Every structure is written in C-alpha cells, then in structure tokens.
Image 1 (cartoon, protein in one colour):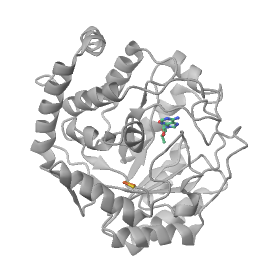
Image 2: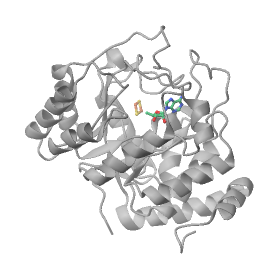
Image 3: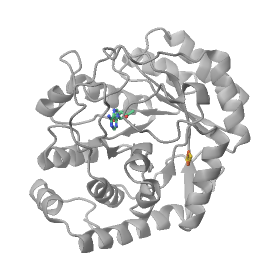
Length: 339
Ligand code: 5AD
Ligand code: FES
C-alpha cells in the first residue's frame, strides 16, 4: 500500500476484515510519517459556517432532513454570514466553509453575492462551498465569482447502498456527475463517506476507496455514522471509531498530500477522537464559526460537540489539543499542493 499507494479489491477487503491493534498502530505510524513529510507538524483550520438548516432532501440518516418537523429551522442572512467571517478572520482563519442544507431560498445570485463579498473583503482567504447538488452552470457561476473549493461527500459509491440511505429522488449517478463537473470546472474537490452507515458492508467501503482513487479528490472527509433520534435510522448503531481511524490511515497512504480533516463526528464518538484522527494521518480541523444561538439547530446527529461554545473557545480548545500532541494550527489557506 505504501509503495503502490493502492491495493486491489480483494487485498483491501482482506485488510479491512482482519486488521489488528498491531497493524493499526503500524499503519498510523507510517501514515503520520507521510503527513509529516508533506505538512510537517502543521495543521490547517477551516472556519465552518452552517448558514441554513433548511433542506429539500430527506436523507434517512440526517437530522435536518425535510421530514423532521421537530427541527427549529433557521437561515443566516448576508450580514450574519459576513459577521462570522469577520470574527473568523480575526481568529486566524483563512478558509471559510459555507455549509448548509439544500435550501433553494438562497438563489445562485445570493450565493454569488456572498462568495464575492467574502473574497473582496478577505482576498487572502479561500472560500469553500458545501451546499449540495447543483447544475454545472450554477457550479460554474460560483467558481467564476471566487469559490475555490467544494465539499460534496458521495456517502457511498454503491448504487444499492445509496438507495438504502436516500429516497429515490437522490441518485448516485447525479452525485457523481456533480463531482466530475466540479473537478472539470477547476474546484479543489472534497468527497467522502460516513463509516458504519446502515447497511454498509466492508465491500462497499472498498468500492468507495476505489471510487475515490479514480476521482482523485483534493480533500477527503470521513467520520463515523452517528444516529439521530428523529430519523428513520434512530435505532441503528454508531460507526466504529477504530475503523474510521484505520481508513484515515489508508487514505493518507493512498493520497499522500490530500487534505483530510479530523471531523466533528470523530470528536463526538470519542473525547479525543480528533487528536486520534490527526495521529492516524489527518491534517485539517474544522471548528465552527456559526453564531452560538443556531449551533444546536444544526444537529445532523445526536450529541454533536461544540454546540455551546463560541468560535473563539473552539479555536482555543483545538489549538491546545493540537499542541498537546505536538502539532500546531497555522494561519494559512491550506490549499492543495500538487506534488
Ligand atoms: N452521522 C454522521 N455523519 C452524518 N452526516 C450527515 N448525517 C450524519 C450522521 N447521522 C454527514 C454526511 C454529510 C456531512 C455534511 O455530514 O456525510 O455529507
Ligand atoms: Fe469546540 Fe473544543 S473544539 S469546545
């Protein structure tokens, strides 16, 4: 794996079915070395702005799905978002991630207006969008107006499994079309999966690894699946921390210079989950910049961390956590660099 940066399907299935504590430890050491080689002890940070929890979709795993009538819905307006950025810039963030449900209340013009304003006020910052499936034309407009990156997890590359997680109106073919469009336009593209999502098999995960190798994304976000009490999957079990960490290690070897976050869901299933993610090969953290009064309402899964803390507190908390394990959060856009 280290030499070829790839295994075949059978080899991956065998590895994922039979890894031990010793093998994991060894993988993490090697993955960490690869990260160190490309990034030193530097960790990139992204300021996450969860600007709307309205969503037209109804994904069975997600707490803000449209059928969840118990969620109190909110939208941040232009001023709210710019305030988050001002606060974030002062805290040292040089990437802003605008993430939301698929909320058609924001037109393409609204998105363009927000993106171009951020870029104009903060020319040394990158803007990442994470607003779901759109047309080629929409993606192109955002890009031409300054959006640098786009996050869109494929969730699972297997059509049958995709159908188990989503209502019929969502298809894996359109999801893949979006990812290819984004790449073609020139975005730095991020994709990824939930580890341990309902009905997921080891073979599915291996298919995801092969799909990602083919897509060759610049960013890869994975985290354990965590049930939300008001979804059809409320009784399903939480994804495995160890398997998530193991996959982060594998992804680091497959994509030596990719940007791989230690996600909030990792931090939710284990108090030191994000540190463990970094020590398994991740190199990015994404603290929340949303106003505290909306945090709790963007609950994709139960017990999500950092819903009561101010942005400054999370920044400080994460800086300390990284320092403790020998890493340092830097003031940097943290772009993907082709080697
Ligand atoms: N548990 C873990 N991750 C989730 N996501 C959505 N719902 C859950 C959940 N219940 C992830 C999806 C999505 C990202 C924004 O959050 O992978 O792409
Ligand atoms: Fe939010 Fe620690 S990162 S409280």
